Length: 137
Length: 397
Ligand SMILES: [Zn+2]
Image 1 (cartoon, rainbow over the protein chains, first blue to last red):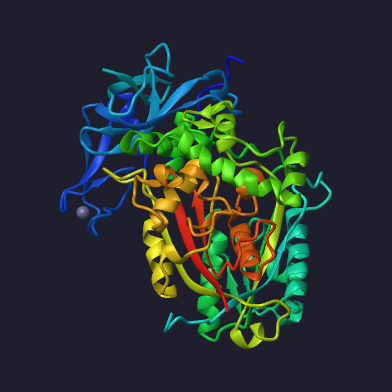
Image 2 (image 1 turned 120 degrees about the vertical axis):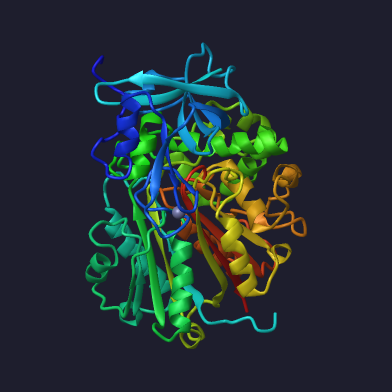
């Protein structure tokens, strides 16, 4: 069962491939419109604030706050069933974007995760990209 | 209620009775069977139907495939699929199309063999897809239940809501299910361990699936289906059963945003449209058919529909207020037994319309005396990320 891996993003997906390329360099990237300053996340080609496409990539600090979370006790997925119990969380990055990830680097997800908790990115390295997981600061 | 338009009415309903078809019938066959029985209920027939609304769950190209399968040549074909709330969207669209004179008799159908397919709707990890959303989120292993659980956690954090309060929703729904022979049969067929009325202790002591949601706060995964026939006033007057008027409709979507509020749903946008059009207030509603994928779904939606203020849902549902035998205390909730204890084949929005219609006809197993007004609110997609909300207000003559 050692070959059962976490489901990984597809590097060919048009809107999000730049984000995932950045992860290989340890960069947690998000987009901001040069014209109207709207932050766009998840990544897209177009600005959702104005009608333009002048989005620039910025690198987040990797620090954020747990907005909400759950500890998964039951999964039928071949990879995740072996991770139980594990914490999934919406994380508000200090720069604004809210992203979904796991809280790691703790012994007991049932008691060591909380809303409002400060966390920072911890990269899980794979061949072509890295997965942004988060650990308590 | 001056100015209240009575442009279209539900005139025929059918709920497919089996929740475990044991591979004997397909989703398409369930749709066709339910359509025939609903038309029969109305006193209409195939040739009366000139509009179909279809979420495409039967395969093929939605309404295109269904028109041929049913042998119809409708003038309106609507293949809206926004998940479990699709049928509230369909009902709103049917009312609009009938009011515009584009159709006279509209047919909505649903069929699913989710249980027979052993589809682990709730606890399957999400497969890696090519949509950008999937590409950003699938790595996390968020199950559907964990998605809703994150709404519950945030609701508890912000408002002090408790698991005991959420359990009120489960026990009221189970009470209604125990009065519904089809629901009891469903729980039997799906091998529920303990088929009886439940207590708050039963719910909070049941197994945790994804913190803070327990087993008895989660819907079942059944087979099933149903159909609804909606007709213009001149048709409705000649139907067998009394008309149940669609008085108002609203629809909306919601998705994650920077600084967004996870405890608020699309219903805050769809409900004012529907109540405003109907010219009624939540306080006048006798029956609340509110999508119960999970306990937290109902709590959130009751607040957003306007039955109480945001954050006060936990206190508001305490003390059995949602039971069918507590008129004057607020609406009776999911009197068929809901998705928690009667029927959830994946997209249960059609059953909200069906049971609301039973109540307004006086046909429910947990009949509320003299029920006059009902709300059906469907939630499609996932409450804790991107979802749709469809609100329908129904009233009798
Ligand atoms: Zn812009």
